[in-house]
Length: 72
Image 1: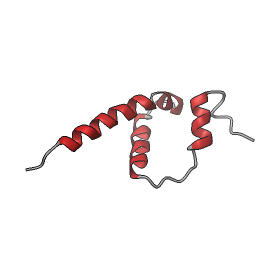
Image 2: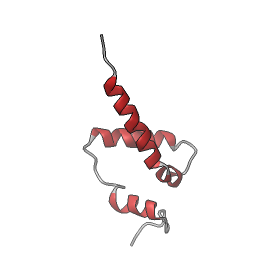
Image 3: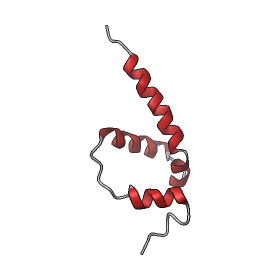
Image 4: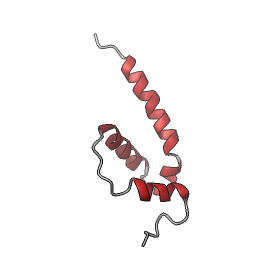
């Protein structure tokens, strides 16, 4: 029996079936979920999942720029 919270939303179903409740051992993935959880404040998880690709792109650009920084 499947949970009812993903309803018929494809992204929610994919998340439920492939990520939710799965142990993480990757620091980048942990950071991603911390960020997603912080963006979720007063928003639904569905809203966050539907904007996840945009957030991943933003943090990819941030990561690229942070690698370019040089410490004296």
